[in-house]
Length: 341
Image 1 (cartoon, one colour):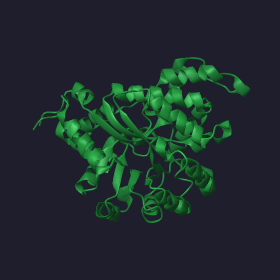
Image 2 (tube, rainbow, N blue to C red; image 1 turned 180 degrees about the vertical axis):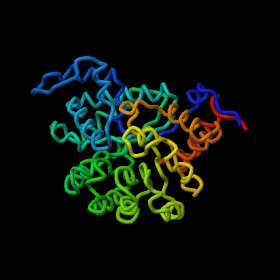
Image 3 (tube, rainbow, N blue to C red; image 1 turned 60 degrees about the horizontal axis):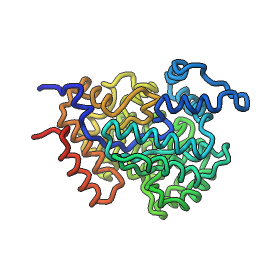
C-alpha cells in the first residue's frame, strides 16, 4: 500500500456538510472585528493576533463552548455577517471545496438586535460575492436557548428559506440539554420542507443519539463520536439510512476522544453507515479538510481512493436534489485531482 503524497489532499475537490460559519472565520477577518469592537461597552479583547490565536485551545468541550460565546461578542451588525460569510466562502474556494452545507447560528445573536431575517440575508449576500463554491445554509437552533426560542427562530427562518436555507441542526451544550424537548420544533421544520440533523453523541452519550433518532427523527447526525457505547446504534443508523457527519479533529481538540485511533470512523463504515468527514469549526480547531484527510491517511492507512469514497458519501448524504447530486458527483470525478482507477 502506498499512502498519498501530502499535496494530493490539497488537490482533491471537496464537499463539506458539517461546518459552522462562525467557527470558520479566517483569523485575519476575525481580527478585523476584534479591532472594530475593542473596548466597546467594556469588551476586553486580545492585544495581538497571536493572543487571539492562542484563545483557540480548549481544556474540554464546555471550555470550547465558552470560547465560542466569547468570540461571538465581536459579531454585532448585519455587515459583520456579510464580511465573515464572504471570507469563509473565499477560503472554501481556495481549498477546492466545491459544495458545502454551512451551519449558521442566528439565535446566538438575539442580543444584537439584528433580526434573524437580516442575518440570513447578510450571510447570503456575502456568500454570493464568491465564485467557485456552492453553499447552502443550515440553521443551528442552539439547544441552550430552549425550545420556545428555537420555535421563534424557526418562524423567522420561514420567511427567508429562499435564501438557500435547506435544513436545521441542534448544536450547543449537548451535555446539558437533551434533544427530546425539541421534537415539536423539528416536526414544524419538516412541515416547512427543511431537512434535519442534530449534534449528538459528542458531549453526551448514546442516549443523546437515541433521542435525536427517535424524538427528532433526524436525517443526519453530527459527530456520533460515542456511538460505540451502544453497539445496536450502528445497525439502527444503517437500517434507517441516517448518515453521520464525522468531525475527527474537532473531537480530538475538544477532548471528546483521546486520540484519532479512538474515533469510530472505521466501525461506522464497516456497519454500512453513510459517513462523511468534516471540519466542524476549522478556524477554531486549526484544521482543514485536507488536514483531516492527511490525519486519516496517517492514522487509519486510508488511500486516496478511500478519501474519495468519503467525499462521495458527503455527496450522497447532502441535501441536494437527486439531479444535483448526480451532477456534483460527476463533476468531482472529472477534476484533475480526483484519483483514477
